[in-house]
Image (cartoon, rainbow, N blue to C red):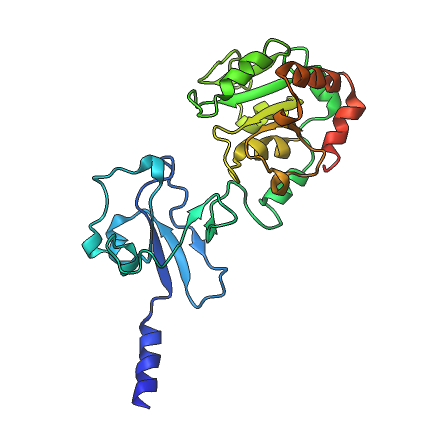
Length: 281
């Protein structure tokens, strides 16, 4: 009886909410602060925090690699057992949070999973932002293809391919790299949101900055949501991310950039053929 009572007391003493500590911000953002995870079927919830004063309470500590500084880390001697660098369990547990769907325990994705309002599925099934007639009208001032780019030193050298593509078809480029188009404004001076920029075009260059397995970002989600055909270059296998098998165009499907440009120009002049890429809408 005494052991049972002690066990019940220990259970009652357990916190109902565990903090998950972001030691570094994610690209400088704080939107994870206060987010609660309560869908794991467990008797407690987890809550994300950026408050380093809660380090001792935290069961999980997350470091965002680009923001990581070697001299700005918690003292391993003060950390929970699983965090310790010299832990006897280091080689036993393999809790990975990455883009690798095949090996990771937790997968970090740009897409909200599931169904319903706000999910990736919900967003791609929404009506296109503009009709084909409106897009044809926009073509008087816009190229058939848009590209928003900020990383000027992508490891896969994507800018070299785009430079070749520009020889055969116009591409409106926004951002810090290779820019040839000013970011549009509303009549009241407000800047367009990225989705508003993309939505006016027929095609969008969805080129990842690394060609890695399972690495797919907002570069495919944004055109799908807006009702624009993405031109893809990234992982070899996109199958799990595509709206349908006929909803995108792959760089790899063409031997040369000239062939790709010719296909884009054909679709630009054939509304029926173009709209087949948006049948999923």
